[in-house]
Image 1 (cartoon, rainbow, N blue to C red):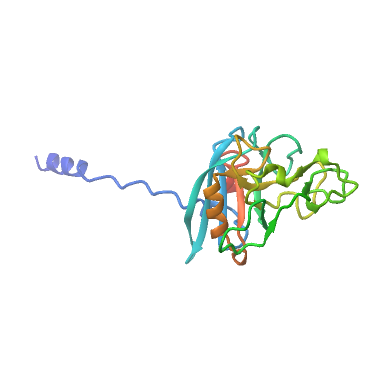
Image 2 (cartoon, rainbow, N blue to C red):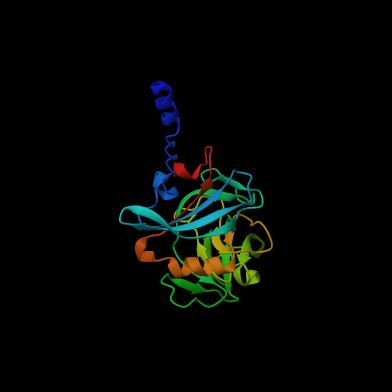
Length: 229
């Protein structure tokens, strides 16, 4: 009887709750070395939607400061190292965020360098141009309008945005140009990451260039898993 009683008592001991996973940035191989990070995570390569979260490093631990639904390229995501321009895919990887820009005025309190777009503002995406993957004021002769973006033509999406430094420091021709974090349009993007307008404003109010924020873009699992960066 005593053995049976002990057995029943042991069965009544509650099982320990499973340990929750560490915050996403703590599972990344690299975060860019700063104390702010954005993560844009999709379920799989073919996904056109996912989640953007912005994080602060506080006393050695990453804490979520905000989150919003995100949209990706119309053809999903692609490995940033092998992506091909014009494929409507969002490049995976870890990237710096050099400056903010917009057709609208800079939001109050922004700490990021902010460049206001005008009717002369273009993003050159012509592979034959010396200005490939760069902002230009007035199209250079070697940069075709048909191969570039007139920024004010996308007044809604580019009301406010952050440049994602994909293929930016040493551009590889044909790899892709003009990848931004910007305001949602009517659906999936041509390769950028987009969020609702209020979320974009929240990110710009939060981001501090002194804290070297980066963005990590990837999937939950597989070879492009965000934790591999």
